[in-house]
Length: 133
Image 1 (cartoon, rainbow, N blue to C red):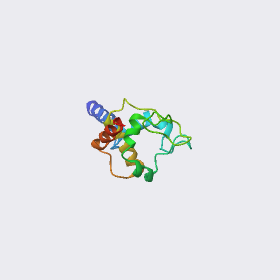
Image 2: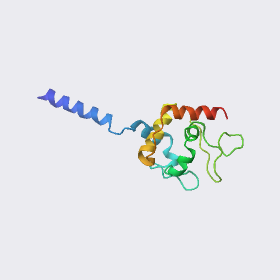
Image 3: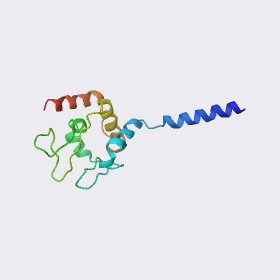
Image 4: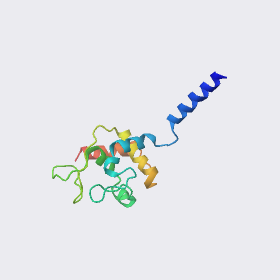
C-alpha cells in the first residue's frame, strides 16, 4: 500500500513539472529576458518600452522582429535598428539561439497575437538579413 502511495506521489510531482502550456519554454524565456521592460503581460511601459500586443505593428514589421530581439534597437546612428523618439534602447540578446527567439515569439503569438506561428526558418532568415546590414 505504501509503495502505491509513493508511486502516485512521484507521478503527481512529475506531472506538475511537465506543465500543459504548449509554449512553456517561450513563456519562461519571455519572463526572464523581456518582461522586465515590456511587462509581465506585454503591456509595455508608456513611451519608454512599447507594448507587444499591437498586431498591426507586428504585421507591418514581422520579418524584422526576430532580428530586433537578437541585435537590439539603439538610438545611435551606427546601430542596425533605430528606436522611435523617446524610446529607450533595447539591448541585444546575442546569447539567444534562433530556437529561443522562435519560442519567445510563439509564446507571444499564442497569448496575444493569434497570427501565423513563427517557424525556425523565418527566424533564421530575419537574423541572416540583419547580419548583412
